[in-house]
Amino acid sequence: MPVAIRRVRSLLNKLAYERFAEHVSAFREILANVDSGEFGTVVDLIGRHAVIARGDFIVLYASFIKELSQDCPDLSAAVLERVDLELRLGLESDSEEDNVRFFNIVELIAALCRNGVVPTQTVKTFIENAFRHGTPTALEAVYRMLNVMRAEHEKMFSSCFDQLAYSWTPRFSNRLRFLILDLIELRGRLWLPRRPPAIPGMMKRTDFRRLLQQHTG
Image (tube, rainbow, N blue to C red; front, top):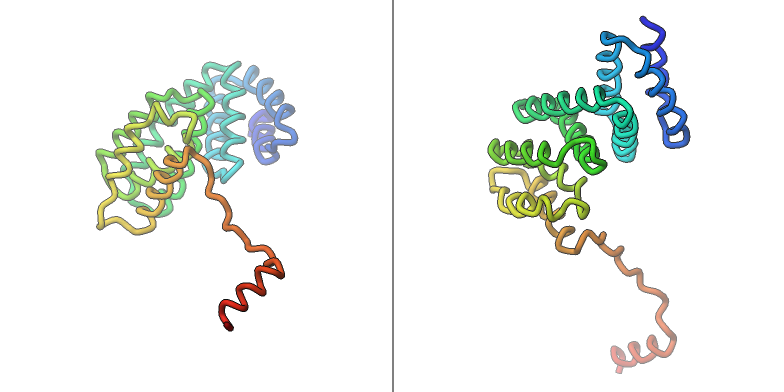
């Protein structure tokens, strides 16, 4: 295995917010010196790590790809080509295992759209295709995409939110229905999270006595 590829593997395994700038700098050096054959391997390795990311690490990888794409247009083009392929394959798959990976990819792509790496038109085209498929997997993918987009792109994707609200049918699971309703409700609250339930404090002694008298006469 070439030294550059071994170094890429090592860096990706250690990628973290605390050493983000250091790893970006190291990757820029690698991308500037790899040959065309190794470049494809580097892109594949970044993609493999990115699509298994969870939670905050999805945003971390989206930021990582954005930083590298600014200095390497070839990387940006390779990412967009891979994005288009993965989205089409994901909509056509019925495998539960494939769906988990597909949903991770969807959230990563939404994060890449938010930071400007993936064009909004790419996301819009995917959402249109997903609505045409109309399967539970396709609708959940739209839900996940819009859930990552949220307020920043609400006006741009307004019609998608509206269409999603009317896409659920009784033949789909209640879980999917609740996910969609929760997103629509969150949008209606202008993306403000629900307030935690109020925990009652200790009742004042005078109020307690008055309440006690009401019930005991």
